[in-house]
Length: 254
Image: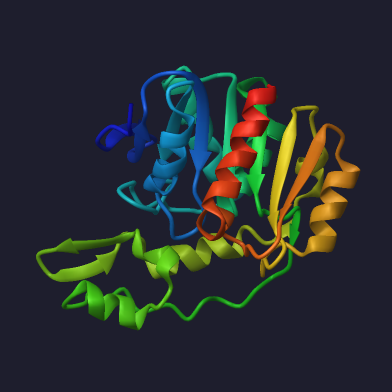
Protein backbone atom coordinates (compact mmCIF):
# COMPACT_ATOMS: atom_id res chain seq x y z
CA UNK A 1 0.00 0.00 0.00
CA UNK A 2 1.31 3.47 -0.80
CA UNK A 3 0.07 7.05 -0.92
CA UNK A 4 -2.71 7.66 -3.39
CA UNK A 5 -2.72 10.44 -5.89
CA UNK A 6 -3.53 13.83 -4.45
CA UNK A 7 -7.12 14.03 -3.21
CA UNK A 8 -9.02 17.16 -2.25
CA UNK A 9 -11.30 18.08 0.61
CA UNK A 10 -13.52 21.18 0.63
CA UNK A 11 -12.89 23.51 3.57
CA UNK A 12 -14.80 26.79 3.94
CA UNK A 13 -14.51 27.88 0.31
CA UNK A 14 -10.97 26.50 -0.03
CA UNK A 15 -9.62 23.03 -0.54
CA UNK A 16 -7.08 20.94 1.31
CA UNK A 17 -5.07 18.47 -0.72
CA UNK A 18 -4.13 15.27 1.07
CA UNK A 19 -2.54 11.88 0.58
CA UNK A 20 -4.02 8.73 2.09
CA UNK A 21 -2.50 5.26 2.28
CA UNK A 22 -6.03 3.92 2.64
CA UNK A 23 -5.87 1.13 5.22
CA UNK A 24 -4.97 0.49 8.83
CA UNK A 25 -5.25 2.40 12.09
CA UNK A 26 -5.48 6.16 11.52
CA UNK A 27 -2.44 8.42 11.79
CA UNK A 28 -2.75 12.08 10.76
CA UNK A 29 0.67 13.43 9.74
CA UNK A 30 1.25 17.21 9.64
CA UNK A 31 4.34 18.64 7.93
CA UNK A 32 6.26 21.77 8.93
CA UNK A 33 6.68 25.11 7.20
CA UNK A 34 7.75 24.78 3.55
CA UNK A 35 6.74 21.11 3.48
CA UNK A 36 3.88 19.08 2.04
CA UNK A 37 2.08 15.83 2.73
CA UNK A 38 4.57 13.89 0.63
CA UNK A 39 7.12 14.65 3.35
CA UNK A 40 5.82 11.52 5.08
CA UNK A 41 5.96 9.08 2.14
CA UNK A 42 9.02 7.26 3.47
CA UNK A 43 7.48 6.89 6.93
CA UNK A 44 4.20 5.72 5.41
CA UNK A 45 6.00 2.86 3.70
CA UNK A 46 7.67 1.90 6.99
CA UNK A 47 4.35 1.80 8.88
CA UNK A 48 2.28 -0.01 6.24
CA UNK A 49 0.05 -1.96 6.33
CA UNK A 50 -0.84 -1.55 10.01
CA UNK A 51 -1.20 2.22 9.93
CA UNK A 52 -3.30 4.36 7.60
CA UNK A 53 -1.29 7.55 7.12
CA UNK A 54 -3.30 10.60 6.07
CA UNK A 55 -1.00 13.50 5.22
CA UNK A 56 -2.57 16.80 4.17
CA UNK A 57 -0.81 19.69 2.49
CA UNK A 58 -1.57 22.28 5.16
CA UNK A 59 -3.11 25.62 4.20
CA UNK A 60 -0.89 27.61 1.88
CA UNK A 61 1.39 24.64 1.22
CA UNK A 62 1.66 22.06 -1.54
CA UNK A 63 -1.48 21.75 -3.63
CA UNK A 64 -3.79 23.18 -0.96
CA UNK A 65 -5.39 26.58 -1.32
CA UNK A 66 -3.93 29.71 0.17
CA UNK A 67 -5.89 31.06 3.12
CA UNK A 68 -6.84 34.50 4.35
CA UNK A 69 -5.17 33.84 7.69
CA UNK A 70 -2.56 31.51 9.15
CA UNK A 71 -3.68 31.63 12.76
CA UNK A 72 -3.38 28.86 15.28
CA UNK A 73 -7.17 28.49 15.18
CA UNK A 74 -7.17 28.19 11.40
CA UNK A 75 -4.59 25.40 11.27
CA UNK A 76 -6.32 23.46 14.05
CA UNK A 77 -9.71 23.83 12.34
CA UNK A 78 -8.25 22.35 9.15
CA UNK A 79 -6.99 19.31 11.07
CA UNK A 80 -10.41 18.86 12.68
CA UNK A 81 -12.01 19.00 9.23
CA UNK A 82 -9.73 16.26 7.89
CA UNK A 83 -10.31 13.97 10.87
CA UNK A 84 -14.07 14.39 10.79
CA UNK A 85 -14.49 14.20 7.01
CA UNK A 86 -12.41 11.02 6.73
CA UNK A 87 -13.77 9.44 9.95
CA UNK A 88 -10.31 9.09 11.51
CA UNK A 89 -11.19 9.76 15.15
CA UNK A 90 -9.59 8.99 17.45
CA UNK A 91 -6.38 9.37 15.45
CA UNK A 92 -2.75 9.38 16.41
CA UNK A 93 -1.45 12.79 15.31
CA UNK A 94 2.15 13.30 14.21
CA UNK A 95 3.57 16.73 13.50
CA UNK A 96 6.90 18.33 12.69
CA UNK A 97 7.68 21.93 13.75
CA UNK A 98 4.59 23.93 12.63
CA UNK A 99 2.77 20.60 12.37
CA UNK A 100 3.93 19.62 15.85
CA UNK A 101 2.40 22.72 17.43
CA UNK A 102 -0.75 22.10 15.42
CA UNK A 103 -0.79 18.50 16.67
CA UNK A 104 -0.57 19.21 20.37
CA UNK A 105 -2.97 22.15 20.13
CA UNK A 106 -5.44 19.89 18.33
CA UNK A 107 -5.14 17.36 21.16
CA UNK A 108 -5.62 20.06 23.80
CA UNK A 109 -8.62 21.70 22.16
CA UNK A 110 -10.35 18.63 20.67
CA UNK A 111 -9.28 15.75 22.93
CA UNK A 112 -11.91 13.28 21.75
CA UNK A 113 -10.50 13.38 18.21
CA UNK A 114 -7.00 12.36 19.28
CA UNK A 115 -5.61 9.08 20.57
CA UNK A 116 -1.95 10.03 21.04
CA UNK A 117 0.53 12.62 19.79
CA UNK A 118 4.00 12.44 18.22
CA UNK A 119 5.77 15.80 18.23
CA UNK A 120 8.92 16.25 16.17
CA UNK A 121 11.00 19.16 17.46
CA UNK A 122 8.20 21.65 18.13
CA UNK A 123 8.51 24.02 21.11
CA UNK A 124 5.97 24.99 23.74
CA UNK A 125 7.29 28.54 23.62
CA UNK A 126 8.91 30.31 20.70
CA UNK A 127 10.14 33.93 20.81
CA UNK A 128 9.47 36.42 18.06
CA UNK A 129 11.79 36.06 15.09
CA UNK A 130 12.54 38.36 12.16
CA UNK A 131 10.82 37.57 8.89
CA UNK A 132 12.80 35.39 6.54
CA UNK A 133 14.34 37.16 3.60
CA UNK A 134 12.77 34.77 1.12
CA UNK A 135 13.03 34.93 -2.63
CA UNK A 136 10.31 37.09 -4.13
CA UNK A 137 8.18 34.28 -5.54
CA UNK A 138 9.93 34.39 -8.90
CA UNK A 139 10.32 31.40 -11.16
CA UNK A 140 13.59 29.80 -12.25
CA UNK A 141 14.63 28.51 -15.65
CA UNK A 142 15.68 25.12 -14.28
CA UNK A 143 15.63 23.07 -11.10
CA UNK A 144 19.40 23.55 -10.82
CA UNK A 145 18.95 27.33 -10.90
CA UNK A 146 16.28 27.12 -8.19
CA UNK A 147 18.51 24.93 -6.02
CA UNK A 148 21.43 27.33 -6.45
CA UNK A 149 19.28 30.29 -5.41
CA UNK A 150 17.74 28.43 -2.45
CA UNK A 151 20.45 26.02 -1.22
CA UNK A 152 18.29 24.27 1.34
CA UNK A 153 17.51 20.64 0.38
CA UNK A 154 14.58 20.36 2.80
CA UNK A 155 12.71 22.91 0.66
CA UNK A 156 13.32 21.28 -2.70
CA UNK A 157 10.53 18.73 -2.30
CA UNK A 158 8.09 21.66 -2.61
CA UNK A 159 9.46 22.74 -6.00
CA UNK A 160 7.27 22.34 -9.06
CA UNK A 161 7.68 22.96 -12.78
CA UNK A 162 4.95 24.73 -14.73
CA UNK A 163 4.76 26.56 -18.08
CA UNK A 164 6.75 29.50 -16.69
CA UNK A 165 9.59 27.49 -15.16
CA UNK A 166 10.43 26.14 -11.72
CA UNK A 167 8.90 27.65 -8.57
CA UNK A 168 7.85 26.73 -5.06
CA UNK A 169 4.34 25.66 -4.12
CA UNK A 170 4.04 28.21 -1.32
CA UNK A 171 3.91 31.99 -1.23
CA UNK A 172 6.82 33.63 0.65
CA UNK A 173 4.53 36.23 2.23
CA UNK A 174 2.21 33.51 3.51
CA UNK A 175 5.13 31.71 5.11
CA UNK A 176 6.19 34.80 7.03
CA UNK A 177 2.63 35.48 8.16
CA UNK A 178 2.38 31.90 9.39
CA UNK A 179 5.75 32.07 11.18
CA UNK A 180 4.68 35.21 13.04
CA UNK A 181 1.61 33.45 14.41
CA UNK A 182 3.47 30.40 15.66
CA UNK A 183 5.54 32.55 18.03
CA UNK A 184 4.35 32.88 21.61
CA UNK A 185 3.70 30.93 24.78
CA UNK A 186 1.71 27.74 24.19
CA UNK A 187 2.52 25.98 27.47
CA UNK A 188 -1.16 25.75 28.42
CA UNK A 189 -1.89 23.73 25.28
CA UNK A 190 1.20 21.57 25.74
CA UNK A 191 0.27 20.70 29.34
CA UNK A 192 -3.41 20.08 28.66
CA UNK A 193 -4.90 16.61 28.45
CA UNK A 194 -3.69 13.14 29.30
CA UNK A 195 -2.92 11.73 25.86
CA UNK A 196 0.27 9.69 25.51
CA UNK A 197 2.90 11.91 23.89
CA UNK A 198 6.39 11.29 22.55
CA UNK A 199 8.58 14.33 21.95
CA UNK A 200 11.36 13.76 19.41
CA UNK A 201 14.20 16.27 19.72
CA UNK A 202 17.32 16.83 17.63
CA UNK A 203 20.16 17.84 19.89
CA UNK A 204 21.52 20.13 17.14
CA UNK A 205 18.15 21.84 16.63
CA UNK A 206 18.11 25.59 16.06
CA UNK A 207 14.39 25.79 16.90
CA UNK A 208 13.81 23.81 20.10
CA UNK A 209 16.46 24.33 22.80
CA UNK A 210 17.39 21.12 24.59
CA UNK A 211 16.67 22.67 27.99
CA UNK A 212 13.13 23.47 26.86
CA UNK A 213 12.60 19.99 25.37
CA UNK A 214 13.58 18.42 28.68
CA UNK A 215 11.34 20.79 30.60
CA UNK A 216 8.44 19.93 28.29
CA UNK A 217 8.89 16.24 29.05
CA UNK A 218 9.38 16.82 32.79
CA UNK A 219 6.31 19.00 33.24
CA UNK A 220 3.82 17.01 31.20
CA UNK A 221 2.63 13.62 32.52
CA UNK A 222 2.51 10.63 30.17
CA UNK A 223 5.24 12.18 28.00
CA UNK A 224 8.45 10.58 26.76
CA UNK A 225 11.43 12.45 25.34
CA UNK A 226 13.62 10.83 22.68
CA UNK A 227 16.80 12.71 21.83
CA UNK A 228 18.75 12.34 18.57
CA UNK A 229 22.48 13.17 18.75
CA UNK A 230 23.73 14.71 15.54
CA UNK A 231 20.24 15.54 14.27
CA UNK A 232 18.91 19.05 13.88
CA UNK A 233 15.40 20.41 13.62
CA UNK A 234 14.38 18.04 10.80
CA UNK A 235 15.03 14.65 12.38
CA UNK A 236 13.12 12.73 9.71
CA UNK A 237 15.75 13.87 7.17
CA UNK A 238 18.85 13.94 9.40
CA UNK A 239 18.25 10.49 10.92
CA UNK A 240 15.44 8.81 8.96
CA UNK A 241 16.03 5.33 10.34
CA UNK A 242 16.21 6.49 13.93
CA UNK A 243 13.15 8.65 13.43
CA UNK A 244 11.11 5.83 11.89
CA UNK A 245 12.17 3.43 14.65
CA UNK A 246 11.15 5.87 17.39
CA UNK A 247 7.76 6.46 15.77
CA UNK A 248 7.13 2.76 15.14
CA UNK A 249 8.14 1.83 18.70
CA UNK A 250 5.76 4.40 20.20
CA UNK A 251 2.91 3.23 17.98
CA UNK A 252 3.58 -0.40 18.88
CA UNK A 253 3.08 0.42 22.56
CA UNK A 254 -0.33 2.02 22.08
